[in-house]
Amino acid sequence: MKSAIIGGTGCQRMVNSEWVRHTVDTPYGTVALFEKDDVYLLLRHGEGHTVPPHLINYRANIAALQQLGVTQTIGIYAVGSITSMVLPGTIGIIDQFIDFTGGARQSTFFDGGAGGVRHVPMVTPYSSRLRKAIARQAAQLEIPLALKGTYICTNGPRLETPAEIGVFRRWGADYVGMTAATETILANEAAIDFAGVVYSINWAAGLDAEGISFIEAETSEKVITQLNHLTKAALLARE
Ligand code: HPA
Image (cartoon, rainbow, N blue to C red; front, side, top):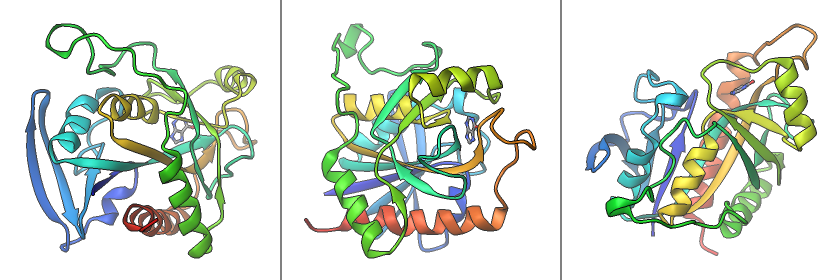
């Protein structure tokens, strides 16, 4: 079974000289990614973190994984906390998303023409098998982990107003980010078993007396190292 991790903000530091770089040509564009120990790593913001969330070529990224024969993938997402489900500096598994990108992105392979028309169900957008594998590995590695949560996905790249965060909280969102919904939709359309893990780097707008402030670089490095181990172990684990 071929596996992939899609890494976000801060995940460039997961790549060292042990990873082999590949490029894949897809109908949507060329994608660069890395491979090590049977796991691919795709950096969604590009190798130098130069692509903002609203301009990521999500279709090319997921099509590249599909072309490589990847059947299971875990996305890693930096978020801002709206509830105490996942506190800044801690991690959790997504079980639902709210797509607040407003249709501003290419977030489907099924847009008529050669792609056809299909309406893929999103009742359980995240693989329960992968979620269980992540939870099991977290317990073994003694990493505290929230087992569920709702991610609201904005278009960005700007951050939110406190009024927006107030609405999102009333809607039931636990944390906010700018990428997971689009990636999750396309992975489901591509029939890739998909899970999402979040790590919070701040309280969302209006929830922190200081204004917006982000966790220390040292804490975020520690959390990303944990996530690197956790996601790889979950993908490679035998049931
Ligand atoms: N809002 C949106 N996306 C984010 C945030 C936030 O507060 N923190 C990290 N990604």
